[in-house]
Length: 276
Image 1 (cartoon, one colour):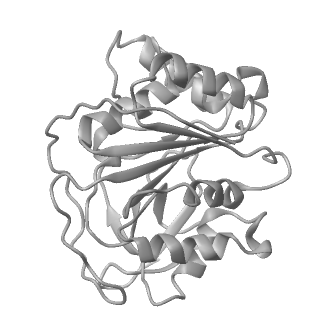
Image 2: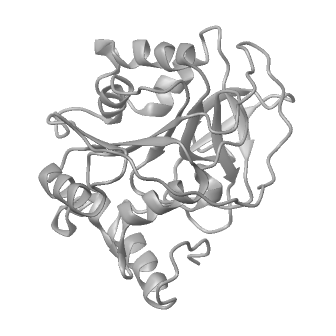
């Protein structure tokens, strides 16, 4: 199911964040033109662990905002020409009403994974990939507290966004390793560099390559990092972009209350990084 809404946008200049130096191996590097359209997919079909009573992830209340509002504002702060695809499942009608009421002048598509209880995030991703209209795509987990540095385009190559694992336990579990050129060699549990559950595809060819992978029956109930490992076996290669800022994923009650309390202590501030 899909509903399309018109567009009204704003933008602002954001400071450049430090990333690691990377070089392109397999796959072509392209020069991004100012104003090129980008699609941002927010995958938000399932609630976190024991969090159904709190409603859909997109509508979790954090301070005076809901999580989806923070995500959309982070995107608006960075990108001028964009479309947003929100793929929801659990209580999708509530998310749809919120978007149509608050963002009726935004270029936002609502895609519903009606089988969210029977499938995994690769199926949610597949539905989004089938609806991408631009030649570049940024994919974000819908449980992430986003801020502008996380959603800007760091490099015009396919990449995953990662950060160093800290001393405190993170809700992010998937790590990555890369070679001396910054090319990802493996993604799995327990690796040192934590994947922020954000990745970027820079061309129609790379988008289509991943779409073919997640469209197979074998990937219907698999996780996205498994699909990205498979993507790395094609003629394209994922790069790893490291950031100093750590993403926070609200996938359990404890983390939700930690984030919520932090927002309630800062008034109307929209973007927060430190949740310790």
